[in-house]
Amino acid sequence: MKHLNLHQKHSIMAAYRESPLRQQLSLAMTVGVLLVALLSSLASTWQGSRQIRQSMLEQGQRVAENFARQSTLALLSGSPENAAESAAATLAFPDVTRVEIHQANGSPLLVRGAPDHSKLNHVSSPYGTKQAQLESETGNDWRFVAPVIHKVEASPFDLDAVAKAQQLGFVRVVQSKTTLTRMVTNVLLINLAVSFSCAFVFLLVIRSLSNRLTRPLAALSSAMARAERGEDDAQAPVFGPKDVVDMANSYNRMITTLQDRELALRDSQARYREVIESVKEAIFQTDSLGRWILLNPAWTEITGFALDMSLQQPLLDFIFHGDRARVAELQRQLATGMLRTVEYEVRFIHRNGTEGWAEIKQHGRFDAKGVFIGTAGTFDDITERKHNEQELAAHRQHLEDQVQIRTAALQAVNKELEAFSYSVSHDLRAPLRAVDGFARMLQEDCGPTLPDEGKDYLNRIIAAATRMSQLTDGLLSLARVSRNELHRKPVDLSAMVGGLFDELQATFPERRVNITIEPELTANADQEMMLAVLQNLVSNAWKFTAKRELAHIEFGRTRTAHGTGFYLRDDGAGFDMAYAGKLFGAFQRLHGKEEFQGTGIGLATVQRIIHRHGGEIWAEASVDNGATFYFTLPDD
View 1 (cartoon, rainbow, N blue to C red):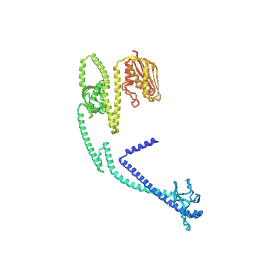
View 2: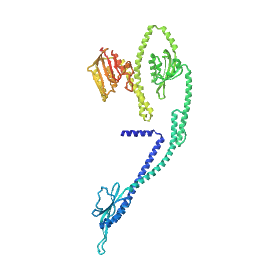
View 3: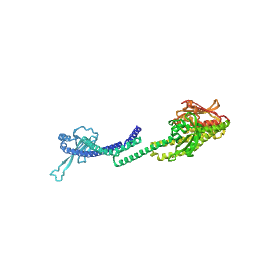
View 4: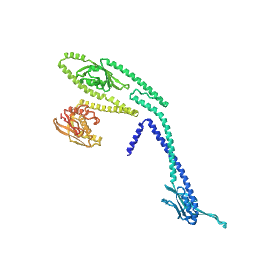
């Protein structure tokens, strides 16, 4: 309940903060004025009740003293009938509910009025006092006592005698608090009526003043909202206090300036479009990801692809696959600033499926802060010229030369791809660190002042940089596998798997995993490479069983169609065997990254290591029933 009340309080405060200024002022003033009125009423009533109480206490004492004087004869004669009339007169007094006359020894002589239900201990006689006093007080009444004193005059024949005062007994008067309660209630109601009437009048005055302030502000806010939606009528009405009028005038001047600039921009864009649509070369722009964001109609004439089919599509998708690696490298050099401009010839794919040749002149685009935002350039069709060159070259080359050239080109492309992978992995580290570092600095220094949209952008930048760094590490690992030499020696695979699981269990102590490892499984292999293989396989088994309350993972040896091999089996998420062909491809993932994290490089690295050892690796699985990875390692 405490959490619920806290949640309700937060909801109420959030609703108050999100309400318009006019409503906030109205609510705050109403609550404040009513609270002041209530407190002032209570304070005034408390002060009045004290005065009324004091007055009624003095009245009760006077009634008790008067009744005591009238009870002298009854006590002297010992006859209650002599005090019956005075008792009736006293009971007739407002709020007096009971009267008592007690003799000197405390025994009652006369009791009239309502029964006494009080449990208070009665004093026997108020000796030592010469006037009425408050004996006790309950929640409903007061009890007053007064002594009955008889003065004995001295005898005129006794010259030494003096007058003596004798206490014959005492009286008790019980007075109800009914009048006090009624009077205090009336005072409270009158105070509340007066206070809330004044508060109502004050609120009317304050509301009138606040409306004079909030109405022009609300009108200005409405105009800003229209401007944000792109409406033409975005001017704000000018009225209200001078400060608000000045603000509205400044806003209207700003809107007029922006509208004029927008019209000028539209005219400039129209003229620019007329120019680029009239040339025969394809003029283009790409964004930072290499996707077309601007193409003129000449593009359709050259490639056959409509503009709406091409925009937002990657440039590389239209390049012949054999040239994509070279073009991708040039795009990387433009993005990193290694090259300011490039000019190259490349094959492209026509919409009808044929190949064409284009000459591309391209330069990088950077914003005012030096951040790469894309490229711009021209795309000129040179297909006819290249065909003529190729026909001339074909006549000068023999078939064997062509085969050798293509073989050498294929080898060069493979080496270039490998070098490119290694180069990308290294060269991307510095800009990635810069992007991540500056983004985190910006988040720490300026995060509290940024709007929610800006904070979201920063979080996305940091997350993307982190993921790219992981991909870079994966590429480095993949590149090292291809370059490093094998150093075969006996490797204890069982101990290696056990150590990896011990580390994972220590890192995730909350996981419940039943691990079975066949002991003393060894292989003649490179120790570092096999550690990378088992680390990837064990990590995958641990990751994909995360949703099991009690997971089971097993490592052992078995006979396969390729000879004696090893296996790692789990009962995790598994996968659809229809997609098994993608399993060991770089950057291939069979599960969404929202469901399971990963880079898609680990299994590609595992396959390359196993193949370098001359072995084979494959997997068997079904959805939600786990997966088993098999691999073989020849002895030589």
